[in-house]
Image 1 (cartoon, rainbow, N blue to C red):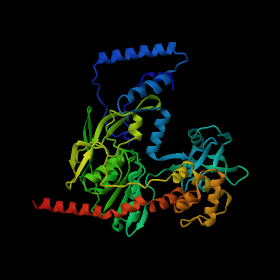
Image 2 (cartoon, rainbow, N blue to C red):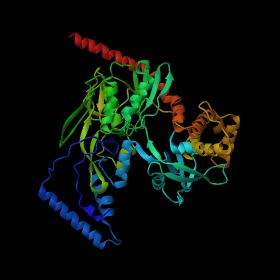
Image 3 (tube, one colour):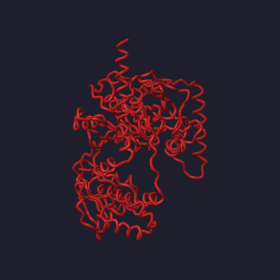
Length: 527
């Protein structure tokens, strides 16, 4: 970055977002510090920086000292969610929010020391149509050798103007020679709401992966395709959802709540309270809903979950959510960098603050060692129906789910990427007609057994026998992923997920909440 960026000039633009490292809307705070104290502090910083610049053993650049050091260091003293975005990170954040870019339409990742491989061609994308497969090792992009490059650099090479051609050369298991593809770049739309799944008997499953600019519209499209009058029960999966745009979280909650119900509010030292309510409402569609969450459901996902729970609109199933109740405003800086600063706290409709305590924990412990039983016993609120809920530790589910623990063999299979690597090899060496009903037969399982031996992955015959059904399930998932699409694989996985099947069994509890809410309304109207 150019040295002129030493002067951090804030531009009068506020980006609205609500993500794990991002945030939701906040007004520009007014300066309140004593001017003399600020000047003295800046003078001390300048002196310290000049001493470092003049005397450090190696040359020091302003970019490294200030943008990689001073600013992030300052923000780390404040809270876990205030952060600095360099131009590349800021651009990536905006791209993720829009869910649109120009390229070939696939996700790539590192394959150990071998290089960058294709992980997922998006269904219907140019890469998918061209025949690129998960497991393909990318060795050339438009003649540029990609060995030694990180995935970020390879991904940048694959992007480009719409209508231009990119030549990709890959190595594939089962092929003795590299395979070349000429792929025409196009507009790639990444949805945050995959296609719904019918679980039978009028019960449907919808997953929201994050909250981007198209999320509420994508949800609406799914519900229209189903026909809300046909819905007898809905499983809304927010597991692993890190958040996203506040207005999209509000719009999703609006779809299921009654008109004028409070969805969320936020306020801070320098920002007035703002209350978001359901403007449209559910138009009388009151089918039971189970919201499924886990410890990685955060921010906007917690806003939706908290609103649904506080209004007794849904039964919450799973594990405690992450516990992020801090609001960030993102201030763009010069040269396309940005500063995400915590400016307020948000509150669920009942008034609880779900932010976890971070005052006595390292950032590592805060992000990766959450206490899922944490709650603030001083922050006790009531739902519309009179149920007790707490602040302080994320959203506590109405019903806990204890996921079955993997045994050592299953953990080793995941750690070694055994399923992924085997399927890449198997599809590269066999002509297989993959359908949604494909399952591995005895011959395939025997080949997998030999593959594990060849790769020297430790296991016993007892392990293989005991986990035989599990192995078949995981191989099926990977074959559908590689032979059809990731969407079809996810549909298979989610329709057979024990947690989702258990959530379906909880739909009567969600219906009971609705029935109680109706009785309360009648009672209140009679008074």
